[in-house]
Length: 206
Image (cartoon, rainbow, N blue to C red):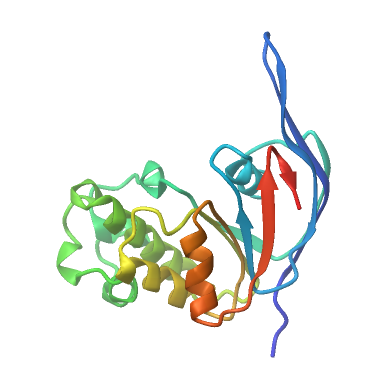
């Protein structure tokens, strides 16, 4: 069996500087994300999203080191911010002529939505559409590191199942997932899915 991609961070720091103050958002975060599923748990505003954005290269770190073998795929909290097309089909593949039925079904969406605007979908459906797009491009990529920023928010039980079965339980990916909900941890415990837990508070990762 092919080994999962690897990711380590050493003394990761990130400071935001304004004319008024300097805020240290990440404070020397160090971790070896060795298992398939890694969960970063902590309250809102503690630095979880900033950590994922730093890994994805969307935030410039102030210090430390990111050691990666593989490439990042990012499912953000509000994936519709990245939507640029006028139909769901084009949002998945970039073309209205591509057969996207398989990916819509995998994401638990009706194939009847292909021609409608993504903005007519509910928040949960938009997140499922982003999952369908990710599956279209990355389903068979064995070197993927998935960054899931609070992925179960706005999702019903079926939506949670879609993300869990297609990404987290897929077996191909290393997953780093953030959450502030204890229920999410219980979900994986009840399904007897092994995970490594990291707790974040005030920019400190433990």
